[in-house]
Length: 301
Image (cartoon, rainbow, N blue to C red; front, top):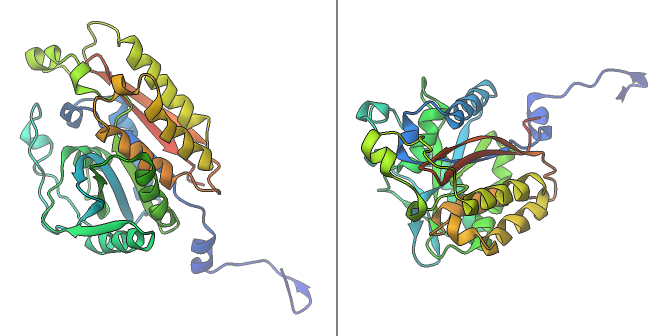
């Protein structure tokens, strides 16, 4: 820039640099079964790698929507229990998760409530909510050796309206410019009625694939990847919403709960300025027909 008629270098204050910084990426994680808390899998390596990047970049907060907490009526709730504990799970040793310290974000949770209300979404605090494995599994695997950043959890709405859950993500999209990481934790192919649990029950092996995944699971998994990686901005939101009309959707999702986090993530990563790239980071299969694919929507830089 020119100052006093001379060419001088341009320097920006930290505040201006922060304002100029681009948004953080959004992550869409498929959390899988409870045994993913302890198994050495490709998703576990991805989660820890993302956690390391969060620490390196000094991300201040995390906001998540999972797949196991919904609210009736026209509301969503935001976790505001400062003393939240973890709901117990089966098929996992207690020492894999019980000693881990949770960091509920009460200040950040209030900001989330205010933003949702400002967008016309009926949001209220839940001051008694305890964390469920769909969220604490991800946080533990992201930050296995340290205390995680303060985290806010947003419930689904039990009507499972795709447009409504996209609106929730869109309403919170500005947080991406405030050193906040937005995560959806659901499932790419997640139909408990179509899984094969025998290997888990008999041998504690969730990753055994005695037979290949069914055609419907493979087809829907590929359609999800295509919808995410071939679309950006508002097109991403439309593509993910339309997936609920896919001919294999009900095979892949016996209930809608594990798809809502995908809509939430698409809402948060589907603004006019979001140009991607949206990439598939890796995956694993469990219980024959459960596919746990991990996505990054947008880039860090």
